[in-house]
Structures are given as structure tokens and as C-alpha cells.
Image (cartoon, rainbow, N blue to C red; front, side, top):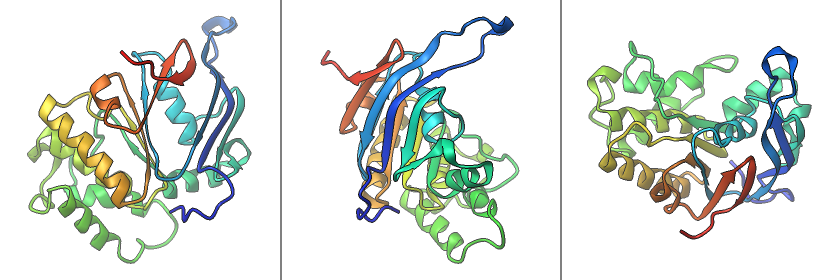
Length: 237
């Protein structure tokens, strides 16, 4: 958790560009162009744009799943490109929580077991208090009576709430949600967005949501638009 004492912003993107290798070795187009952004601890941001606009690519760079072609991604003043694979893995495990459009829960595991999976990724035994935290968070999101249910016994909205708790179990500083409401009906989507905003405050976690839905972006404090590879403040409709 960020205690606010750092002289650096929690997240800074410094002229970030990204392109992928083109088939046949030709020159690939830029997916992201000169993206510059500063994010303070505790903020809520929406990245809005159509499919293919680079939202997922940007989240992957922030989450340490990929490296920029140009520019720098800094978290707490650290340049992620300078971290080796072990340090990057530790960063993803302890400082980042991911929520995707598809929940990616393990079908053979209960809700409680799925939430605890990230606590097993580090060296040594599960951290003390992890199960109690998992139970508390599942209760907080309305699933206290569903701890022993497997994903096939849960609704789509319930599965996504389990995925949110799993993303929070290690106490990350950044929660990255990539189209988290895309597979949900309107009522479940509204409930999930309200929950994410509430947990942003309660867990003191910075929230960045990639979405193509204006109604989702409107619920977050700072809506930004990705268009033609560039990030700009969202223009009023």
C-alpha cells in the first residue's frame, strides 16, 4: 500500500510508445503514441475507446506484462523496464491486481480457494491472515454464503466479484480492470462498477478501468480517451 510519503506519483507514463512486430518483418504501426500520464495514489481513472484502440496494451504495460517500445513506465519512481524477470514477477504479484472481462476462475476450486490462489505464488507458505482476509472480502462483496461454491454454481456477476476479490487479496497498490463489465448484463455491470469504486476507497487502491462503455467511464473521477494511439481527456458528448 502507498502511504502517501513517496516523492513520486504512484504511476507515471513518460512518452510511452508501443508497436508489435509485423508479420514478414515489415514496419508495424504504432499501437500507442507518446502516451504521458501521471496518476496519484487513490485515483480512479477510466480508459475509454473502441476495441483495438490500445486500452489492453496500455494496461499490460502498466501491469508489467509487456514492455514499451519507447518511453518509460514508472511505478513509485521505478522504471519497470529496468526490473529483471524475478522482480517483475514480484511486482505483478504484490503491487498489481488484474480483473479481466472473463473471470478466469479455476472451475475445480471453490470461490474461497480461487481467491487464495495468488497468495501461493510467492516463496514459502501462504501469508498469515490471508484466509481471514479472503473471507472478509468475499463477505464484503456479498458472497459470504457462497464461499464453498464452485464457479459453475455462481452467476456471471458473482464470478466477476470473486475475480475482483482475488485481484485484491495481496493488497495491491494498483487495480487494473480490462472491460470488467463486458460479459455482464446491465444490472450486474452497474453493481460491479459501484463495487469497484467503493473498494477503491475502502482498500485505498488506485483503480484504472479500460472500457468502451461511456456509462462505466462516467462513474470514475478521471475519464481519458484512447484514440489513434494517443491518450487525451475525454471530450464531452
